[in-house]
Length: 602
Image 1: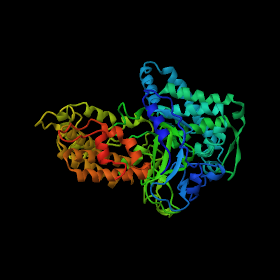
Image 2: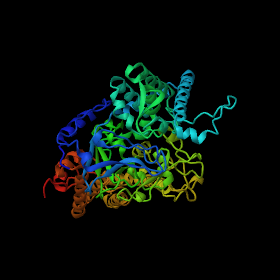
Image 3: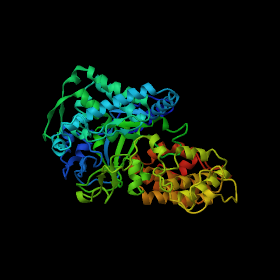
């Protein structure tokens, strides 16, 4: 990767110093060839039992995306390799159509808590708006000739027995905010919808009509604002024209949707487009400095891309992504053969080693994430197949609050979401080191299933010899990433106490976990190797330190490019972190260590 990113990094560094930065609008690298996607990839339509999937080609501007296999037994459209692709190849660099910052979502959620005292009127209004959206969805579904043929017997004229109301899918404030931001942009420039967003999944009204209408269940006020914003689109004359449907399942070609305007089409489909296609955007989240004052956490958010929305999901992705501000890079993380589908992961890579049920719960979509092989095969039968969830009551989560409320299933307190989240990690790091190690040991025993869940593990971690009822027997293991995160905190704590000999094998165990369980060239593995190198350096084990450092730099160059100079640019603050106590004879952080362990030229 030889893209010029210095100016991009400079602008991102400047923005990250602000507590509440506006959504970034950084430039694409000056030497990036915008024809790269067309040169390396092509859009294919897997039509196996999937009559509703459209087709498209990036060359003629017709784009479309299928979120996994939501709409049928086939896979829908996706990116495929035109020719063999080497690991580290940049496939796409794209800026989003719109982005919502994490701080904006947090601020809206805080307002929701303060407004919680009297929401009855807003709840009624929100319910009415949601009901109207359900009716709009039902109207779209009724216009699908295939649907009518299948349900003629069920839809006889009988005013005394109306059909039951359609189910809805609730979700997060962030999704609603992103819908509103996009709607405002469409009001100013309707072509954003007609020539871009409208071609994303769900690609037409009949497809949308077969999905649960989306409402903002986290915050009634924000949900009502979203509905009003969408209804305001009808005031734009250009959006009051009859809607034209691309790839209609009933026509097989472009057609006019009877009785539905473009504004109504947007109102029905845009929340679903955002739900199924938006991606998280974070700058350098793998770095230990990320959440601190010298990190880039302020630039985190959720965004909607157009070209990147064609990447389907796989639990064994062959494409990784990383961002600088709002500029997002999609890079091959392994050698890919010609004809293979190019897939990303819609969830954090740490989740991918879990079983089907847990991956599906975190994914929060309408399909079960089952992988039969990785995305590196050109044989469609071996490519990741995401099976559609039948209407059998299987649970899915869309919003952060819903996921938090449902971290455990009803059976034996089996976690359906990771337990050791940022809040738990911060609570541990606020403890004195000795107490923290005790709490980590207690939580590790629970995470690995060696101890039954104990709600007071951290409170009682410093009480030695207690054998309370909650600590007896074995339990169900948590997510593997829970134990992984706890071991990282354990290594950090031991390193900070000067116990480098105990910390190093834990760091190396964390590196081994990444190598075995996460996609190749994962950025978290690079960050962990850097810490292992610094720990070994503090011990005076220079050969071990240099071994970890060389591997970290090599993997970094494959994923991020730019050689040692870019590595040092991205990791300079990481090496300056005051993690380990000062040694008498050798520096353990700063520029001298950077020069010794991570030289520009050997």
